Length: 133
Image 1 (cartoon, rainbow, N blue to C red):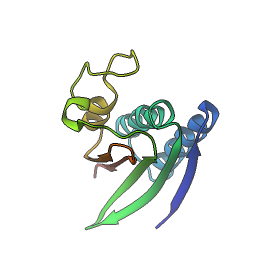
Image 2 (image 1 turned 120 degrees about the horizontal axis):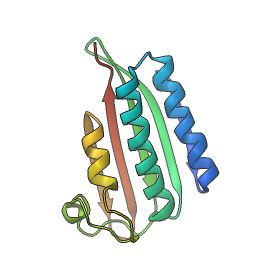
Image 3 (image 1 turned 180 degrees about the vertical axis):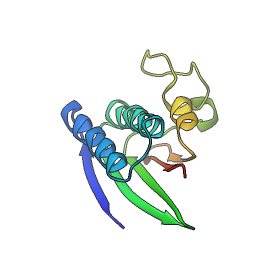
């Protein structure tokens, strides 16, 4: 299993991390649509780490499970955390004067989505995209 870790503390580092997601999905022969969905989710979640978490990390892991190939992305920060995850997942909710589609949009783009956050301790979002057979 291949695992790569990227710091996300600047917009340039976010660009490098996003390119690594594209390269991994291409290497594993993901289709155009599933690759685009994963890269878009990575962009949204990486931006959240940068803007709301004051920087953090992204880890890419290639998965092989029950004959399936997938990519797991884990975004972690030690920012202020999210006091109300349910509310933060709702479309239109924003604390950064944006469209408020980041978390909910990312959840809709991937096959599996998990978020854990504790106020004052940070946030960890893990997503998985499975390659279609």
